[in-house]
Length: 353
Image (cartoon, rainbow, N blue to C red; front, side):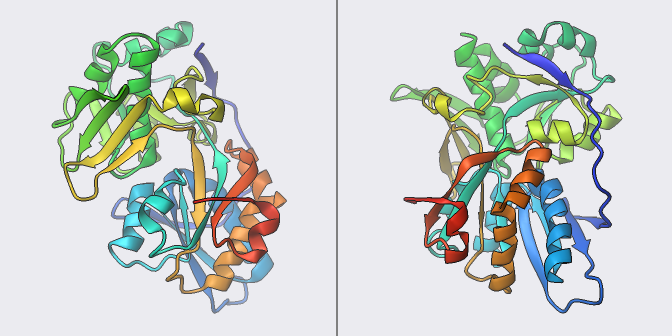
């Protein structure tokens, strides 16, 4: 059953960063004390920004290597490497499957699946009908259609949180036996989108080019919606639980059957397949599955040794602790696929991929 939570204050160690918003992306530059000559570039999902920032501070102190972190939607992260030739020393994505989908074998030879999350519906005290949602959390989807309410999720063609939001609403239609949830909150809002049953699976198609209608607001990545919530420009958004906790937002915790939190429910989640960039050569059919983050060092990394040291720190007990503190718990045993470097084998269980 859904429940309302949030608002707890967390004291986070101060980290000196320079943040510059450029083209919808955030760059965090860490300066090395004493003037380091090497600096690695990390391209990652928006929801990895805060824990990676904390790790970067620890890493710079330990190795004397600078770190620049650039955040995008995860689909955009892999596109930067595979289509635009960007040199990223470390790639971190909110859906580990994007690495084998787009990067293996040409751009990466290995990857690790390491941390989890879940989708929640976030809001603030300023949100319309906030008190109603707090009293009736199991009717969370009804508030999205109430007069004057504006809600948002990230672009499904650019960001896993976006296609997961679509998947959650499709799963909600199944779970609540109410097909209008998907129709009213996705299909009627995204031009050219459609849905149909294929071999017993609910397939949702999000075209490569579309317009957003009505009271839905869409941004390139999930963290872009936080400022809109805090300013009152939108009332509700589909976000990761970690984002809600890190930004001290109120949230409705959705039923386990639809929030993509539990590997035990992967069979249920798989009833929904979201097609991103539908109708284009880059269309991908993404079966809904429990949320797991992934990381790799691309083949074209400028500083592969230093990048691997960062991933070692990420997978170590230090990295695990940072992620636990930020609401993104690790898998009990991170999974390594492909030609996993020897330095990482102590932290992973190797699999096929």
